[in-house]
Length: 135
Figure 1 (tube, rainbow, N blue to C red):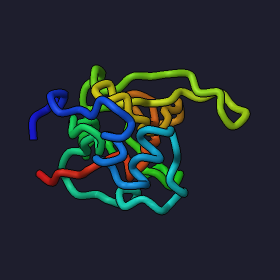
Figure 2 (figure 1 turned 30 degrees about the horizontal axis):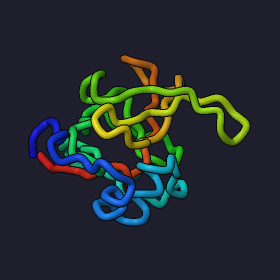
Figure 3 (figure 1 turned 90 degrees about the horizontal axis):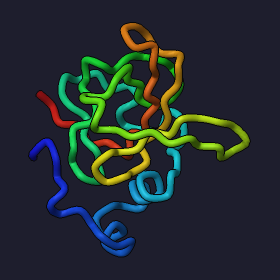
C-alpha cells in the first residue's frame, strides 16, 4: 500500500459505511471511542507501521509506541507531522486536543502532554482506527 491513499476515498457517508465495519465507522466517522483495554493494539509490540483504518496512510511507527497503561495504544509522535491534524474537543465537559487523520479526516483519538521524551506527548489512539503492517 502506498504512503497515501487519496485516490479512492469515499465521498459520501454511505460509501464510508460500506468501507468500514460498525466499530471503525463509530470511531473514525463519529468521533467514538473504544472501551479502554479492549483494542488489539493496546498491548501489541511487534515492529512495523500503524496505518489509518480509513485510508491506509501510515500514521505511527512502532518505535514511537510506549506503554502508558491508559488502555489505548500510546505513541510519542506521528510517523510524520503532516499525517495528522488537530482540533479542540470540548465534549464530555473537558477540553482536549483531538487527533485526526490528515488524509481522510478520520477521528483517531487525542494527544496529551504527559508522554515521554523526546516529545513529551502521548498520542492516545483507538486501536480500531488503525491497521498494523509488520516489518
